[in-house]
Amino acid sequence: MAQSIKSISSLVLEAQPSCVQFSPKDPAYFVIGTYQLEPDREVRPSSTVQRRNGSLVLFHLRDLRPCFWCDILTQNAILDLSFSPHHGNIFAATTSTGAIDLYSLCFDGGAAMEQIRSFQICESSNLVLSIAWHPSSDHKSSIAISLSNGKVGVLSYEPSKHTLDLVQAHSLEAWTAQWSEFAGTDSIANVYSGGDDSTICRHRGQLEQQQQVNTGEPEDDTYRPLSQNKKIHTAGVTAILATPIREGTTEILLTGSYDEFLRVVAVDLSNRSWKLLAEERLHGGVWKLQAFTQIEEREDGTIVFGVIASCMHAGVRVLEIWRSSKLDWSIKVLSKFEEHGSMNYASDARRSLPNEGTHHSLVAVSTSFYDKKLCVWRFDYALPTR
Image (cartoon, rainbow, N blue to C red; front, side, top):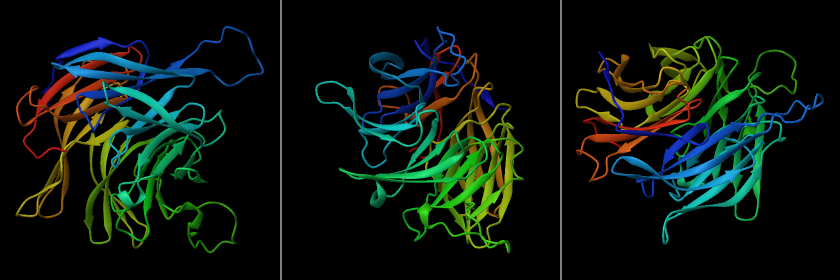
């Protein structure tokens, strides 16, 4: 039976939290992005655009209690944020007005955030819903993105210019986009995406060079991904976690969905087939997934790693993903955190610092949207952590 975890500390934020991440450069700090829908004070029947604003809020975790440090108010809502794995002081944030903004988090003479660049990705009426940095340092300035109009793309930037490739991958909102963990080693870098149309897709990273699937029908201009699956998920695909695990020509993904299931999915790169390997109902829409351990491969061939899942109205789940020596996959719910009174869209976890607990403990921060609650909690875990 899953253990129930209690918070160590909590507070109520000033705005509704949509995303959170610890700083990889100094993990005593974390950034929260917020989303606030402004009520219209004027009657404007011709306007269908709702005004949103937000903020980026930097907290310092001191004695496992979150202390406000500084913030940046934005004229748009923040939907997602992600620190670069290659430049630990740089993070990207997505906006409700179709842009991606880059920020630096500097620690010279005290922590401070500063916007350094901005890229307008699409019309301001569309939302940039997710971002993912390329895993390879050879492509450290490439970011996979997904949009509320169903498009998926890749932004690549240099000091004085940038390129943007977008394709119509989904018929409804593209909730998530994620690079393959093998994007830095393969000649073809794959991007995975999930949409509100219950479809998961695999795309070529160089989207403008996308090869069309041979259907036997006359050629048209309709975009077709390298492969896709519309049967595994029974509701929108909201989260994808690519793993560095391959079995022959098959790549292993974890997926989350509005249908409340976490799934282990195999994608065959040779024949475009998709296969469900394991699933576990988490009793809430699985909005976000994060691996908090390294992959441990044991002498008998068993593989195990830990994942934290943000499960909307069900709170947070701490999970173990197992592959047996016979290549059978399973999902085990270790712990659950259920103190949030509304939607848990954002959680993050990292190893305890020397003054925060035992060597095998991890510290987590999690948020809930409508009640604006931020919680800090801790759990013990024996596997090597990231």
